[in-house]
Amino acid sequence: MTKFIFVTGGVVSSLGKGITTAAIAVLLEKRGLKVSIQKLDPYINVDPGTMSPFEHGEVYVTEDGAETDLDLGHYERFSHAPISRYSNATTGSIYSEVIRRERKGDYLGKTVQVIPHITDQIQRAIRQGAQRGIDVAIVEVGGTAGDIESLPFLEAIRQFGLKLGKGNVCYVHLTLLPYLSASGEMKTKPTQETVRRMREIGIQPDILVCRCERPMTQEMRRKIAMFCNVAGEDVIQEMDVPHTIYEVPLDLLREGMDEALVRCLRLEATEQGEFSDWEDLQSRFADPEGEVEIAVVGKYIELHDAYKSIYEALAHGGAAHRHKVRFRKVSAEDLADRGPEEVLRGCSGLLVPGGFGERGLEGKIRAIQWAREHKLPFFGICFGMQAMVIEYARNVAGIEGAHTSEVDPDCAAPVIDLMREQEGVEDKGGTMRLGAYPCRVIENTRCAEIYGRDMVLERHRHRWEFNNDYKAKLEKAGLTCSGIWEARGLVETVELRDRPFFIGVQYHPEFKSKPLAPHPLFQAFVGAAIAFAEERAAEDEDASAPASSATTS
Image (cartoon, rainbow, N blue to C red; front, side, top):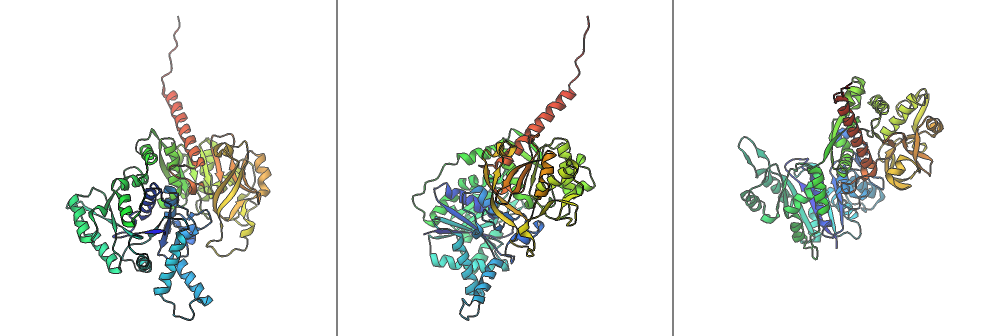
């Protein structure tokens, strides 16, 4: 029978439940267990697909085309857990299903209520998320203990625990030990209060994970254990990590988190695994051989989580080269006031990520033009690829009025146009081209060299596409279409062959990058940026060297 771990949070939000959940998955997988991971979100949106990145952060897209919470990105980057549309459930999706069933008559005329109908549907969603053949299903409950909107989810997991019984369910509660600089001490009272709230709901945490800036003392551990009714060895310290979030599994391993889970779930015949791969990864982040700075020019640059997977994939690519990647975050709108030379000078690569709408587009195009003219390595993703096509069409191919019909429906030359199947679509949620599609990589191209194979499967999230009416003219001007979705003849990747790396892709490769298996495009892009930086440093050194004096006899 599948066993379940429920991860909840208390005291404050943004404690890092998603990273802790993903790290738990690593520990269990290293013991030879097959795990699944699911996120339960208390907001009423059916999914985050219609939410602003400033409101929610990035929308993570699964292989089967679900728009989900960004924590699912952590799950997939850390672990081998199968992530699908059943790995994320929101209040909106739960209520939608209950209302659908009520309209269908499934409740036989009964009054539909939060208990039992909503909580029953939450439990059905939990079982859907725990796919067949899974040993341990890990379920993260979003929000903070005490939030009104989280109560139905907490009640559902309480009932779930009663049904399965001891040894089959483990409640892990993530809490905070705040440090008060005025008194020079950490406080345990907030942890005691949040556990009290959980116990009032009917949930006794089995394991407490205590986030802290400084190490806990043994006295604090004993105090927390006594007042929270938890065994001392099940009070786990989780300190802030100095270099990278990928240190968290090793920290929890040292704290005995895996042993605590084994005890709680009564798991048998599971030996502790070998962590040399994660130890090597930690050393790559902690002791890099160099640094490289890459500019990310985007529309939502003020919020780090808006491009979370982009930054993580760049970090993965840097670790593969034993280099730390520093991000120069540039608002695309700033390029309207400050020229790209001022904004981009000194960086060794330019990445333009996805986005929607007119705001910042012209700034992105100016940045791409400057990168092309100065042979700066460039990587365009989704809308960034479309901006690359517009820039090339305008400034190299000489196509007057080149634009995207997303911004100007009446433009003279829509080199980027609405996909045929998107015409007439009015609903915004879940209606884009979503999920994994095959891409044929054209031989003798830079993409073919990087991928090392002629067929790849990459994830999409867009409505507009490369307009094939302009393909011949753009290719004649030197733009190479190096990847095609054969079923529709849709251009998926474009590149400039005379550059080490100047590539745009319609899909989102960042969603498939992992720290132990960097996406080949990100690894190659960071490698090109490192080479560019080294070449520039060599040129600067030559230029600053004193001229040799000539002697005559």
